[in-house]
Every structure is written in structure tokens, then in C-alpha cells.
Length: 271
Ligand SMILES: C[S@@+](CC[C@H](N)C(=O)[O-])C[C@H]1O[C@@H](n2cnc3c(N)ncnc32)[C@H](O)[C@@H]1O
Image (cartoon, rainbow, N blue to C red):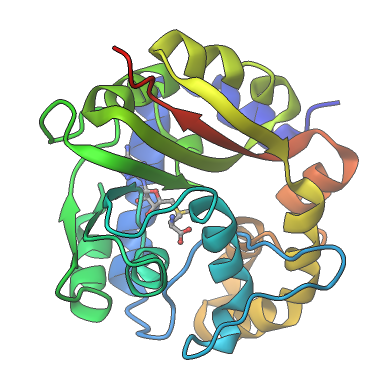
């Protein structure tokens, strides 16, 4: 049975959904300027214990980085022009720009405060952040080799409009690397949304077990961060947002009413 949480999200009108999420992320980025907080995803941890060699990257961000790596390293990004839509606080784009070496990378987010934070803490000579809307991307047709989208599209009013936009700005042969959560029901509709836009599905999969594994491993760290920084009255909303053990989303992943999915998509080169 679909959880109340997803029932609520799915029944919102597109405009209300856009408005509420935008408000939430604006407030979060403005209120929580913590320079050490650079990721807002649920993370990824292999079930066999395999860990990414992080070298100079922060160990405390391991599972968030591993999700980015899992999604982005599906294709060779080296020397490519890359756009991340929904870049949040910029930690993922920063990891990709440094570790996977695109020639140029832009992170786009509709929260002006998150963009400001990202440009202050995560920009470098190949990476910058701009404000923009996933459903109306401010770029020319066929201008990117790779578009990346990690745990952001559940906030959008119209998923089909977003995927059409990605398809428009991708160069022929370009890749769209996508991961996010959905209700089990909504998850079944995704293939058809991607295909309607014209994308070819190269890989697809459910990664809920790996995401749950990360949520378990990072539970204590998240609880401490919430308890140290968030007023008691709103801690419960933050725990749901962060997906700590026994939160609504954690339980929905556990009982199968929510799933975490990833797709590797390609714009055909013979258009
Ligand atoms: C859960 S956070 C994930 C951020 C980042 N990808 C990460 O993994 O750390 C979702 C992000 O999507 C952004 N977002 C939501 N709707 C958007 C839209 N329509 N256009 C651009 N960004 C959007 C939010 O502002 C937020 O930063």
C-alpha cells in the first residue's frame, strides 16, 4: 500500500508542488549556511561493502559522493560538457568536476540561495552554478554532452516537460544520467516518459537496497547534525527529509511503497 507521504506528494497540483519545494529549499539554503553541508541526497552504499577510493574527498560525505559516482560514472565524462540540473549545495558537481574531469560543468538550481552557497563554496575554474528552472532550461538546443539529475525531479511539477527539455539541449549521442525516488506506482511510468521524449534506455535499475544501506550507515551522523542545528519543534520534519531510520520515506523504502531508481539514457545520434 502506498504510504501517506507519497499519497500526499502525488496528489499535489503541479503548481503547488513546485511552490512548496521551492520554498523549502530556499529556506534551507538561507537558514543553514554551514560550509560543511554540501549534499542533500540519501546516499549509496554497495551491499558487498565495496567502497569508492575517495583520496582527497571528505570521508563524512562518502555515501552522498558514492551516489553521484554511481550515477555519473556510467559513461565517460572526461572532456565532456556537463550540466547538472538540481545541483543543490554543489557538493556533487564539485566531486564530478574534480574526479571525472569534464571540460566544463554547470550546476543549475532554482533556489537562488543554494546557487549562492554553491558559488561561494564549490565553484572552480571549470565549474560554476546558475539559477534556473528544470522545466524551462536556459540553454540552446543541442548544447550539452551529458545532463545529470540526482534526487531532484520528484520536486518538479511536470516530469515530461523536464525530460523534453533535457532531450532538447542534449547533443545527438549525448547522455542523460538520472536517479531519484518515486512511489512504486509512479516509478512504473518513468520508462514511458523517457521514451516519449525520444530517449533510448541504455540501463535501468532499482537501487533501493543500496540507498537503504547508506541510510542505515549514515543514520547517527544525520541525527547528530539535526540535533545540533535544528530547533526541536521542526526536527521531525528534518528527520523525514533526511530519511533517518523510521522516518516516513525510510519506512516506505522498506515496505516497497517507495523505490529509488536510476536510468542511463541516450539521445540517438542519428537524428
Ligand atoms: C534533494 S535536493 C538534491 C540536491 C543535489 N542533487 C544533491 O544530491 O545533493 C533537490 C534539489 O533540487 C532543486 N530543485 C527542485 N526543483 C527544481 C526545479 N524545478 N529546477 C531546478 N532545481 C530544482 C532543489 O532546489 C534542491 O536543491
